[in-house]
Length: 613
Image (cartoon, rainbow, N blue to C red; front, side, top):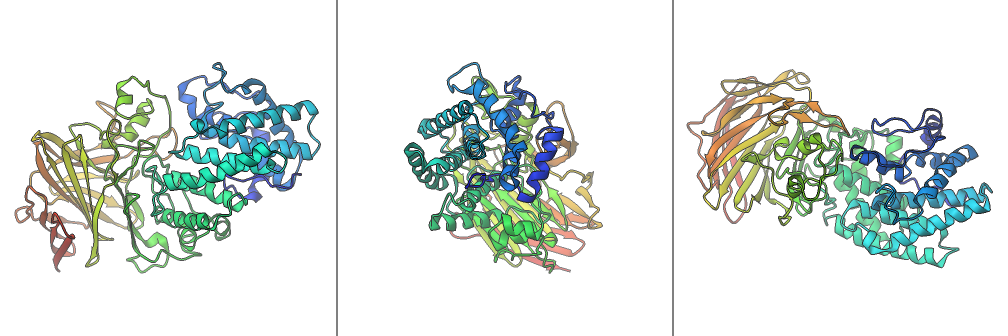
């Protein structure tokens, strides 16, 4: 066996790899619900339909070879190497020329090349070391490896701006390190990879540790690859290692109290929990170990609120219940960023919410990268990379917990990304308050203030104003977690909460907003009320909210209160056209509440309230 172990970039625990490899050899390899492939048969390398883009990409990454190489590296065994070698030689016989127009576009796709390169490098090294190669096969694989090296060395092939480029450089480093002692070209390629890695981390991660691709799950993926590079001895720079710890601590804020990752943008409903033993191996910080083990090991973040001012996220995790376990926490997170089109949904200022032991408000999810859009199509002009109707829905503005103007999605193409939309925030009298603001369609200002009293209530205050005096039909959308029910009544909406044996009441605190009837799994005239937990899965959930017609300027103030009854004091409420002040009141099970918000043009926010039991 080779002296350098296989670089486990996937993060799969070593004890499980042999069992997984044996299962794959017996039952075939599959991913995300696609048909199983027998690895002893010819691999279907061709891209037959655009619906199989993701599937074809994973094939050309050699993802099916990964568990075989992990198993060989852990326990040896030519049975794993034999199958992997057959697949590699089959691939090489068809795809040796990157310029061949007759092969799949994913054969030399950016990220696929990076992932395949380090797998090919290990396979060649291990097979040669085990005297498992014929001279002819060794020559073919070495030639192919150098084609990969030359391809990755060209800057025009590297996606520096996205996670794809990160995986390309990771593959380049692992491949080149393995052969740098016998090849000067590989040695130079390794040096180039290290320089690129530092540059990419600066580009892709904000100074506060947040990944700039609008999706916590991509933050996780890129970070785990960075950690794998360090764990495998490919990166030894101390400054970079400190930066990596900051990135992991930021990621810990995006693990909800129930252990699922916060699914903003292109994030699946991914469960992050693991055993203490696994957490110690997989994560380096006390904060991350704490949230993935429900507090069995590690320690919680020192603060109850995180404001990623450059990255563009606001997160509250409050242990109001007194429990020392994360599952008892209240959790609110808002996305308020536009750094590029990469994985960016039309979701500006949306939020998700978990409280009283259950998920309440959800993001739409990812669904999958299915059906590439025609670059000249109207969809492409609107910023959609993919044409599948379910994927399109998940990207739309109406699929998120935000304002929608005139049934139109927020623009993402042909507009300048604004970076972070967070403006001001305070913690006062047990309330967490965050203000954010964007400009949409060139003329519409939209400011949102979230006022959150954990485990008691949440107020979503939206102000909008068109500087060109045009009027708009405006909708304030909310999306319930899958499995929750909702009904309308005279005060607004009632949401029974089985887990807490209570209810969540929803009401408008200002005059002028009209209640919309809840929508569940609607298909026509447009999709509404759907949630995607994973690739190619769409489940019905309730969408609801409030609307105004023909308005140039206006305010929504929607209250969510854990209460059996609620009565807003609309007659007493006030909000001027400027949206700079807000006065609202309501009655619920806890008594009478009055709240004042002041958001001046300059200076800080202020909020105060009086409660009468």
